[in-house]
Length: 301
Figure 1 (cartoon, rainbow, N blue to C red):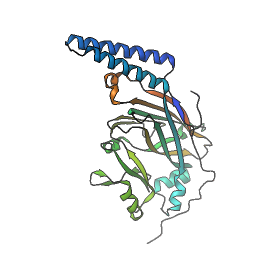
Figure 2: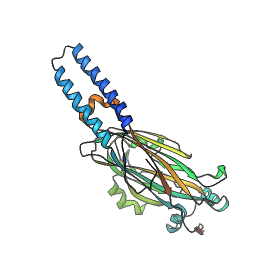
Figure 3: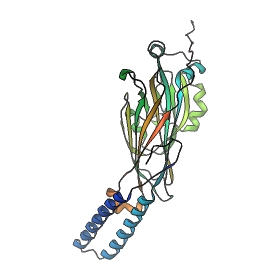
Figure 4: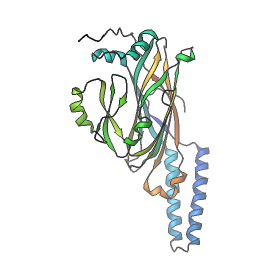
């Protein structure tokens, strides 16, 4: 599949060669199921065979038809947000901005999966590799904050629409009430009273899942969701990053690898044999056209 614009919906499916491999694997698993039933002396061997054959055919047809996905990325420079919010630039960012000539961008990446109404993702994964046109490898674009990160995986114990925010030290976080994620409406109502908030609140859909995260402070990041919830139809997976980009960079992009395992309860007999549908796409990072003239200084008390 050719790399296209990030706003274009894409169909990811197995080609004929991979379909044959999947069919052979499912046929082998089906034979094992029938043989196991026969060894146990079960009376419903014929019914098991009929069910397995019908399920196998449905899975093959689903992987031949494919899954529609839509990756999308939005970026916004953070220094002008500090200025608009009348927040003093923290010392470490001031040095990086004024002396080291780095820019900071908040990037929100959304990976939408459109499944039939009776299917849901069993697993989903999302990897990003940053690329730019800066020749000095020391100054290459890199991720300095991400959400969800390793410290945030405990949030994914329930399905809830929460919120995320960015504070004056460009930390990305989700507000909590006690030990639980605050519902988005309650956070939205009170966010204006919070000090030091530069960006947010914005909606974030937490999905009940075991989440694996790799790649903080790096040019490569990776998320994997082994889902415990069964939200059928359309599903969105959102990732938030803060990028540190050299001022001289004229082009920055993210090579994204996307994967999903479609599933429905009736496929349980073959659950362990289902492959991940994989796709690759280039997501450009839109850079600011004009350099911000950040001039806020802390007022003397």
